[in-house]
Length: 185
Length: 185
DNA sequence: ACTCTAGACGCAACAACTTTGCTTTAGGGT
DNA sequence: ACCCTAAAGCAAAGTTGTTGCGTCTAGAGT
Image (cartoon, chains in turn brown, yellow, cyan, red):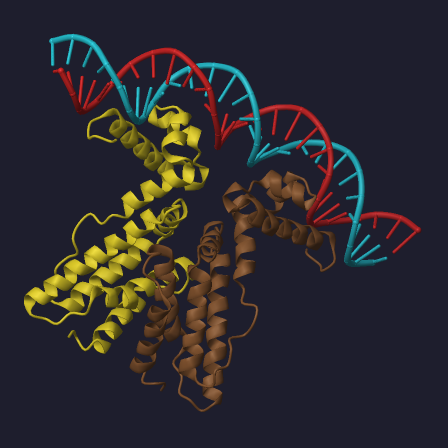
């Protein structure tokens, strides 16, 4: 039972903070549970009991970092909004650290909950863009169509083929999507 | 330097075999390096030196299991070939064990080589299907188009949204791809 | 056929991490 | 104010990960 301000919340916050600090200081691969525990002012057994192992902890932290901090920018029309968002998404996710976070989020995730959360973040952002377009009276494709046509190809390449990804590819995916869905329906 | 029949090759084979046996017997999550080593008739240090850690070893084994064993079946036309292949792909990859293999392949893979291999397997299979279509005189889309339109959405959902995946979805992706690429160009 | 050499493996000791039972404490409910 | 529960601390025991050194196999050169 995690109440804000309670001890559990404080421990979680200090452990997460410790992970972030140490990731920056010694690098993700050098992290160990005892190291994180010491920095967080906690005993290792606390971490093992709450998270199970290092991977699950890293997965939690990674999801937190992958949460968008601001709604997508408004550029005045659907094509611009989606293009800008896709470029930024690619930028963040394709960087070595972004890729590492995505992998961590996927890895230490027995039930798929964290991965689902990542996907939901992206879907939410897309949803905002599409709703905005509809508000303007523009036609707009379905969220799922955008996930299949833009997000999935980007993520597939980020994970499986890290080379040969650039902003032009992201733009092309958006353009083709909007053309083939006829600019909305 | 691994020569066929050499000692290195024998050790690799027996270690891989041990992993497969133990995965079946005690489950993937219960595997440990010492356990695998004992079953393989090898010392743990051998495994640590060759693979580094359990994840990299599991990644190797996973890639091996994800290699297609037969070329895609010939059903007489592009749409049928691609649909059948996509359904089978989904079937294999979306099962709990399939998903676990994909995750293992991705995870213990510092340089992305194993992940790239998985993607290449899929691309090869698709390529065979497309080449066959061209041989018949059918039009066929580009491999990359199929990867973006079919493989990527399937894999994205397998990894990030394990629920709500079925053969109908795979069929729909293929149909929409072939319609929008106009049955080839 | 023989020797030579590089690399890989086994062994064993050590260090680090992980697990677990028991005790203690902080927060929330009555 | 008091109790009750869940979570954290502590510490010991068990496993796993690491490393130096000696040995041996398999292939290459003569």
